[in-house]
Length: 140
Image (cartoon, rainbow, N blue to C red; front, side, top):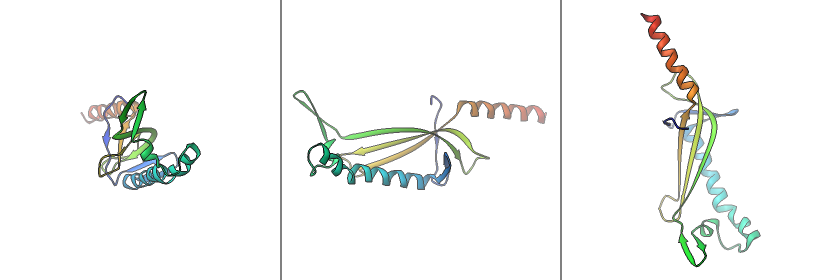
């Protein structure tokens, strides 16, 4: 994923294995899952560890390292999956990687932030450039 990412619009379509989603819907579904797992299921998880009254968000507010306490303002998760993208302005599906960036903040008003970035496959980019050159040669 060394190449530049392509910004996704809300109406672009993402193909993950067999399921397709508009970008806006995929973001909604991922955010719902994050909230559910982070907040609702934390009580049962923490109960099995120690204290049912503590939520996972409280659990991650600080770390203790020896005698030092480290305050955690934000937890960042990155997920990368293979996918195909159909952009509104494009002619067809483009293969690549979808990077899902999740930020969970303990200090900001927007507790959950989610960003999607698409990184096209190198081979698809190279092939596309070659196709453009062939078309230019054929046109002359």
